[in-house]
Image (cartoon, rainbow, N blue to C red; front, side, top):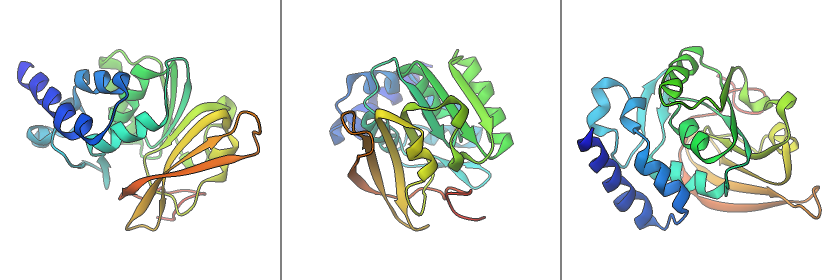
Length: 217
């Protein structure tokens, strides 16, 4: 475990802090989160490397820097209700669980959702609810959300998610074609909730969002 701790600290210093991630809450949580628990046993040696890794079902666990960038963009203070589209391995989910009040996560692949649930419970992330289904619809019964994060790429901003964003809320989503996307941040204005401010964060490559507001299989 000491070896993994050193790897985590090195990961944060060289891959994340060095790339201008400055939110100390995000940095502290990523220093402590055991990323190696979220990857397949055969890939544990690469768990803290500077790249995404396959987790099965044609899905991936995102590069640590991208996880940090997306999380920082949500500007979490600790009392937020967060919607995550794409539970995947559960690593991003666990990071959010340590930074927000409650996390609602949707995963379309049941086996991934079940595995993530086991790991989250092991890490005492009991403030996470997971639903199996089409995440592009969002989670209307629990809306509005203070923050929404989509860990799969959409061809355009999903309107269902925009509609479920609270005034002042942040939506972070990769948008583009199936080969290359732009990571975008949308903020619903407090003084004029109809207005949505858009900001481009960086170029990226994510797996495709499959569903009503995403891509077909």
